[in-house]
Image (cartoon, rainbow over all chains, first blue to last red; front, side, top):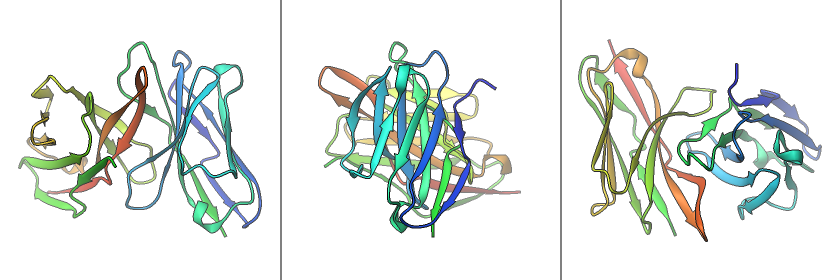
Length: 114
Length: 116
């Protein structure tokens, strides 16, 4: 399968713990996006990369969130000192600037903070 | 601020009928609009993209219209089937600085239930 891959699919963590999610985009895509989705809502933009450069971060992204995309390939999203309000589905998507069309989403990582 | 509204109430229709979903937006002039399908527990899947200079686009049983004057898009599924049951998301692009970032702003989605 050459689609967008996310790991893990599910994560349950205790409040205050740190968590890290990984996203492997489609290999020829130079853009990578992170979104967060809560129940009954559409995905909300968090941040995006073009190659290894992080070009935009949403105001939703507090200081506890950090994302990286070393070497312009896979990306990681880390949440430090998790809070119950962080419970959500975290979605990764990739796209190609040259084609500038649709986004290809992964299956998401479901985070539950207890 | 930019706002996208989709009907939050679920749409229930009978198999074989045409489903019509609405997406309205304000304070925005998108270059293109996209529709995605999302099944429970899974990521969104791209269906159709329509550009600001296009009035209508079709793909198999799907049809999308885009009225930039009304700031509205309609998404139609003809000859609907129970397998079409899912949540459908409308998304607009975001222009920043020198060009299109590919960043999307989503509506809250409308759940479609097609009954046999």
